[in-house]
Image 1 (cartoon, rainbow, N blue to C red):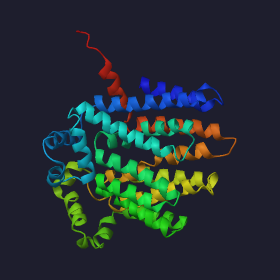
Image 2: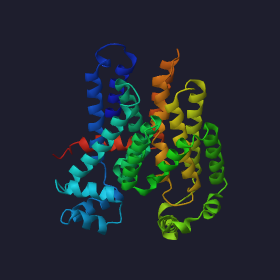
Image 3: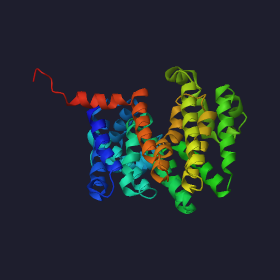
Image 4: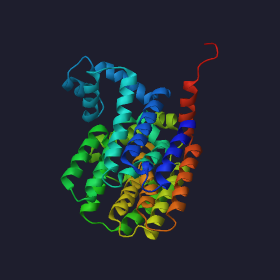
Length: 367
């Protein structure tokens, strides 16, 4: 945990000082570089997950075949396969692949944040990601979704600017890495049709009730999935006995409460400090849509991977208003935000990633 708290100390200097070296672009760059390097190292030294092992195995396969053959022979989305194929032409080393994929996801996030917050405040939001347990799953396990959620963040920013063609472009890129990113289309449609803020709130809480009372499966069964074979097959695959046995409990109450907590948290900030901020309003709308989809499909195995789309917005829900708000209590909220990050790190065992990192540096006494 030494590295986590060391970063927190450096970040703290950036946040509590005004017009000093710690507020400079140079210092911000150093902070971001340290955060990116730490994230890459954590990904490399932690145990290789089941999904990552499959990605690495596939990397060796596509190295020796053409791009179109690689796409045709893979069950994965073409964008990700193309990306893998290109990397395989450079190296099939697992260290190289994990390092590059992790670094690219972090850089995509930073590139998106540059468009919405002052540059010197980006490290604060990145620190939020370093404290978020689902972030590590996205960069170290469900890698395709890791890219998808990052591209959907860029989509969100272009949507805020009403640049629909660019928003749709990044939606397509996100879907080309993982098909579940199609839920971003719902956000584009709702934004284009100007659905009210309250409508999103009502839908979020109604769908949460369907998960709470275990009636979401009955409701989803009424939807015309027969018109979309892939969607129907997806539901059957992830509700099969073997899949449910591997995953364990579904419609998890802890996931439900966690999702609702952050939505209420965002609503509080919006009502208290952020009325009129169209981007924060859009963040909450996106969280409502993505969260609603998770609630509706909470009965399938690995439903937490759908929840990752809304959970990915948590650092923005937490720190964007703290960065933007005009209040004498800004420093108090900043302290609370950092404390919440530390609590999340330990409460959801994300601290294990840093513990493993520290252990990996230890040299055996026998040497």
